[in-house]
Image 1 (tube, one colour):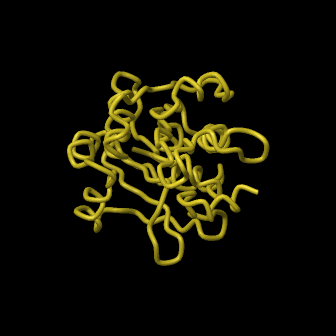
Image 2 (cartoon, one colour):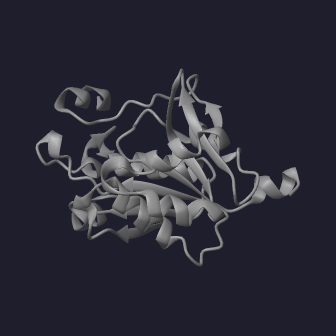
Image 3 (spheres, helix red, strand yellow):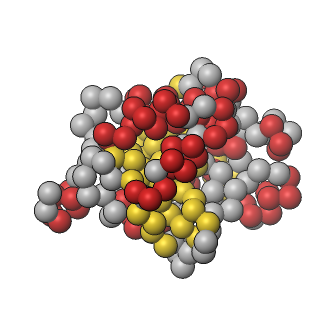
Length: 202
């Protein structure tokens, strides 16, 4: 596949936004306020502006509230009825929702990382080379999101995604195949997990 074909390849965005925010007192992360709007809007915009299409957003906790409050134009909203089982179930739901879309790769992002914007998305997206591509952002010595999975990898990624581990087991088993993309100069990988982390939204 030549470089032009790679650049034009359909890389879908998959945003995992189903969490109930248990450690945040039950405040769903998708609806946390960031710059005056729900956090899910910021994350979805980063995927769109970073070149991903289509963008599928996996919802779980407070799904109806997210649908009614958040402006998510052009996005496909995917319900995960098993969201309480952990991130793995949302990753499976997101990848499964791409069946039949023609996407050659999925770029997976998390809703609770406001420090990751369109620049980081575009940089990792550009690592696509083939349906077996595997790439991840790296911040210093730590691997993080977004992560790109070529379409041929989806069945094995989904099979390994259980509990709250998401794709960690798969990435660990295929570490030598991952193209690491340094994003430390343009993004921060901090999660919003605890009440103290809410200061990152100010």
